[in-house]
Image (cartoon, rainbow, N blue to C red):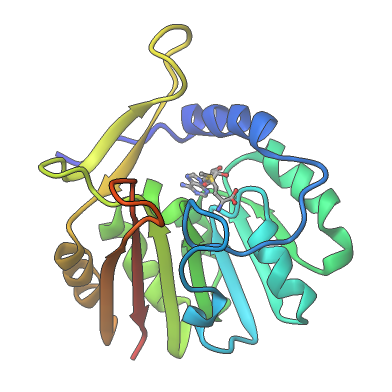
Length: 218
Ligand SMILES: C[S@@+](CC[C@H](N)C(=O)[O-])C[C@H]1O[C@@H](n2cnc3c(N)ncnc32)[C@H](O)[C@@H]1O
């Protein structure tokens, strides 16, 4: 049975996250993994003239693109985060929109050279609904790439996660986890011409790696 997302409740959860995760003195930085300076960089997206980050959070990655003169738009569910990022990165030219990603992609027909997500909305959204919409919003040959933690062996599909400890207000969201071959299948079924999903090892043996997924529109 598909997970039933309660978007109002998830918005409250992500507003709480924004209050602690956003650092006013942050610099622009781009990293697909949880480990600074580890793994490939933005070159995975080719040489885009326009990018859309889905679940852009702190906006640090988007600010890198905007500073290079690339049209950079981010969508995020949290009004608290979008207010902070709009103010923080105003001088870079990056644009931040507060919206649920499926709603945004359904209602806005603009197309991009690249769509990406770094531990963002691609992790928290049903891929069966998200991927066809992303595909429609990419130009011919456009790239969709995202990163997140790899699946825990045996735990596949939507994973319910409580925020913080296991006491206090019951705030939770769903994250989606699959084996790399399943991600590739979901992407090609959604109409992508090619799809490649791999787990990149962490810089230290035995630490949590990073799932890196890249797909190209026909
Ligand atoms: C782990 S955080 C962001 C990570 C981001 N790469 C950063 O540097 O801050 C995930 C972000 O995805 C956003 N998000 C979660 N579900 C979403 C959805 N359905 N639509 C849009 N944004 C969503 C949250 O509001 C949150 O800011």
